[in-house]
Length: 109
Length: 114
Image (tube, rainbow over all chains, first blue to last red; front, side, top):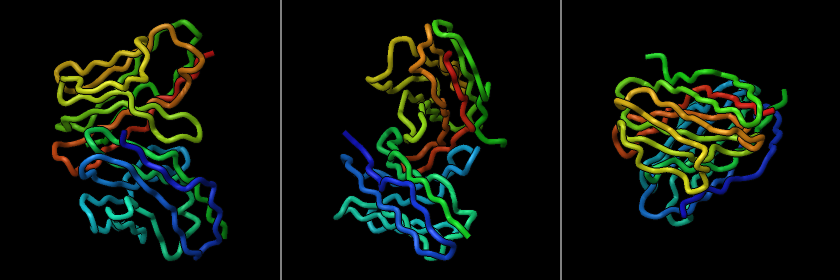
């Protein structure tokens, strides 16, 4: 069945460090791919998405490229801020949404 | 448009009791999803609706769980004879038509079964 595997956390980085959170997927057909973010005490919010192979989603300095050949959708940011501290979920949509287990990020000043 | 609304935000119940949660999706969103999330895990699919039709239900979902979406607007999720293992955050999401659109999540209902 369809599934998402993402990098285990927690991840702790210093402010302005480079961030990569790995995400790979298994799916039939051509799913859309998403990164959602959950800030402390808040609900899930869409961070970015990509709907077909080689598409790049971007938002708030975060980027992820839909790589069909490696079935991956890794999240990157060149310079993280304290305000980026949150839990990040990779997801795919094939009828329903399938989520990874989440990666907790803490950015320290 | 105030987003997806869920009620109540928190519910504490005794084991064996029935509970019902409500979700009001964003207006004109025809898809509605229910997910369950436990600590340290990602959201786990429970069921979804296309308008008033329930199109898919997780095979892992106990018969104690039932969901409705009368008239294709708000939805309710009922858990009968609650067990301690039902303690979790129950998330509702809605999605407009179209295959490439994202889901919009509510804040969730946190259920604690004591």
